[in-house]
Length: 123
Image (tube, rainbow, N blue to C red; front, side, top):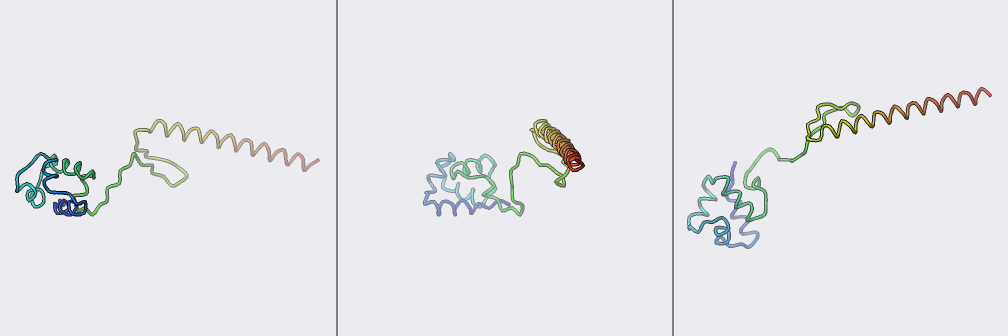
């Protein structure tokens, strides 16, 4: 839910003047701050206010869900990977395939070394 009182709080915390804010958003009307803090401003106005304070527009909303930006998600149990949601799917799948090939090669080497150990023990 939108909480315009955060605007007043930011003005006070940062020792800024209301007139500076109103000038930055292109409004010089005396009642504009009241409209911003108690009204239902447009996204365009909130964006200008956020730019003025150099903060996210999300700051002006009280939300129970915390927004966490991410590029994608990988769902799996640590042993298998599935449902990759990313713009880099092809790159990630190539890396997974490369890792599988490396593991296969290591398994072959381990098996060969174990066979050598068995042969040396027999001699």
